[in-house]
Every structure is written in C-alpha cells, then in structure tokens.
Length: 461
Image (cartoon, rainbow, N blue to C red; front, top):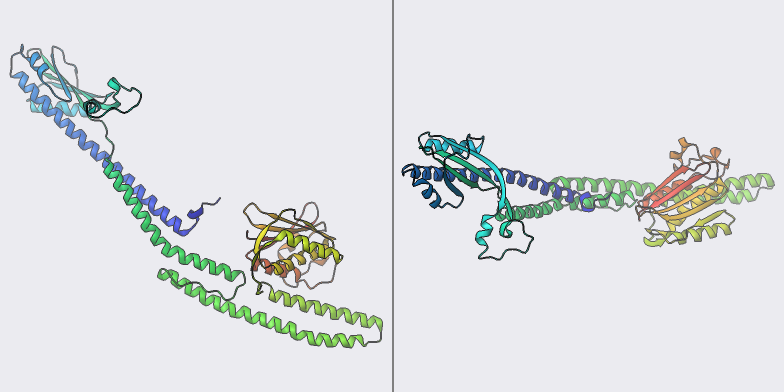
C-alpha cells in the first residue's frame, strides 16, 4: 500500500510535527475550556449568591404582608423570586447547590438556606432578545418562538424569612460555551505556520537524501561516473562526501576489471586464430575435428567473457521500447535458426531500457530454455505494480531447489540436473542477470509445477 508523499522523509517529518502541534493545542484547549468553564461557573454562582442574599435581606426588613408583592416586583434577568409558605427545596444537594446554600447562609448570619441544582433544557433567552434586531435563521422549530434549545444549570434556592415564610428563588447558571473563534483561528494559523516551517526545514534534509539515493541507485545499476550533490545539513554533507569517495573508488576498480577482461578477450583471439590455422593443417580427420571443437569452445568462451564484461556498461542510449515487439522479433529469428522459441506477447508493454542489451538477455534465456527444456515460451506482461515482466518458461526437468540461487553465477552449470547437455561456458544467465541489474531490474528463477523451469526478467515500469 502506497501513501504517496507520506513515504518520504519530508512528508513524515511534516506529518509528525503538525500532529504534535495539533495534539498539544488540543490538550491546551481542553485545559483552557475546563478552566474557562470553571471561572464562568464560579462567577455565575457568586452573582446568584449576592443577589439572592440581597433580596432576602430586603424582604426580611419589611412586614410579612408586603413580602409577596415585593418579591413579585423584583426583576432579575436570570432569577425569579416568590414568597411562599413552603420551601421549594428542603435540603441542600451536593456540588454547586451546597456551595450556594452555605455562602448565602454565611451572608445572612447562618439562617436556614437550602439549594439544589439540576440540568435542564430550554429555549435560548439570548436568541429571544436578539430576535427583534436580527431575523431568525430559517430552520425547523426547536423550541418556543423557534428559539434553539440550549442546556443550562437550574438552581432552586429556599431561604427562611421567619414568620413561616420562605423565599424561593429559581436561577439559571450558564451552560458550557464553545471556545471563542479567535482562539480557534489562532490555533489554525499556528498549525499552518508550523506546517510550512516544518516543510521548509525537512526539505533541506529530504532533498539531499533523495539526491543521494538516486546516485546510489545509479551506481547500483552499473554506472561508474556517479556523483551525489553535496548539500544540506552537515551530517548529510558528510554522507554525500563519503558516498562520492566510495563511488569513485568503485568506478576505478570496475573500469580496471573491465579493461582487463576486454584486453584478455582481445589478446586471446590472436593465439586462438593461430591454433585454428594449425589445426586445419592436421592430416588426421578425427584429430583435426577434436582440435577444431576445442578451438570453437575457446572462442565461444572468449566471446561470452567479453559480453559479461560489457554487460551494463554499454554506451547505447536508453529509450522507451515495446518489449512485446522485441520478444516477437527475437522468437522469429530464433525459429529461423532452428531454435524452438514461441512468443506470447499480444499487448504492447513499454519499458525504459537499452534495446540491444535487453534483446541479448532475452536471447540467452530463450536459448537456455531451448537447450535444457526442449523449447521455451516467452510471455510479456505488465505486473500489478506497473513493472514490465518477460518470463521464459520451458517444460524441462527443472533445477534442484538448492541450485536455483547459483544459476546466475559465472561459469556455473547445472547440466546434470537438466538434459545432460555439456556444451556452453555457463555465462549466459550471468550475462542476463548483469543486464537486468544494470537496468535497475532483477532476474528470478523458479521451478514450475508439476514440471518445467521459469526465468523471469523484471524491469521498472
């Protein structure tokens, strides 16, 4: 499963930074909301305590007959008063009710005061106040006068006024309020700024590392003149410098080895030609044929060694090539030469490669299948991940499982495990593997069920 930019170092650094900021802001908002709610509740409770205590003092200072009328005339935004003969609350509840009762009793010289709270839902009073100035939103009725329903805390307070009378007060404490938009906007701007800053900083690290990875991939594909840009933080610059030094040493060593193999292969042609000429002069036919066969084997070995040295080091330009067309053309040529090879490539499959090298690798695989399996089928398709795949299969006896990993080793032959063929230098599969790796691909071998062998060449899509 691919996550796109999140698979890169830059993407993950930005993601971790932004998520960390969001989590820290969420924790800060939770603490802020809790403290803000507690402060609002304390302020509201203090207001209720002071106003109820003040009203009770006024009522106690007048005659019992005047108290009901005075209570009805007392107007308070969030508190309603009534003088009755029975208390609305006979005992104080826990929490806010108990705190309010104790505070009012302390204000009134410890007279009997009871208070209890409960959560209620009702129409918003603020909405009703603003209705005259602002038109109500078009939405289904949710409460009285279409006011939205809000949740709040209702406090019932009963204060003993003497003479068998009680002051019953009903107050509303504000419910939880959302965080102000300014705080949310500030958090959003902060997260945005932190994300941009993290992107800029991580790109200073991610881009040099991406260049270093590209240079390493080029070096692994057989290129010898590879240099990684030295940029970014000090640690990344040191890594790029060390890589460039290693690439330079490896390039010089590979070039020396290739030049040595080219020189040996070239210089061997002269004595081989001389031996061939002398073998032609031998009078005995049997002896001459044996000598000529040995000379041909030496020539074939020399040519294959030279091909192995050149594999992946060709100066041929890369191009978008249809592998299906290469397979069909190659199988046609092999059939004209008497080699049993069939192409199963109905649809075009394009890949970026050096056409001549890929054709050589596929030829080696097809000849190997014909030699050891009696004939091969070359199937070209596109893998699910987008890679181009060319699979050459045969119906031969296969290869022992413990020898599969050694098949591409130079000069290794598993003839006794296959058809018993003895000719060949054991370099065909090694050349094909070197060409595949030079293109950033791979060559895989496996036995088929119930019988047969498979060589699969995979190139990046």
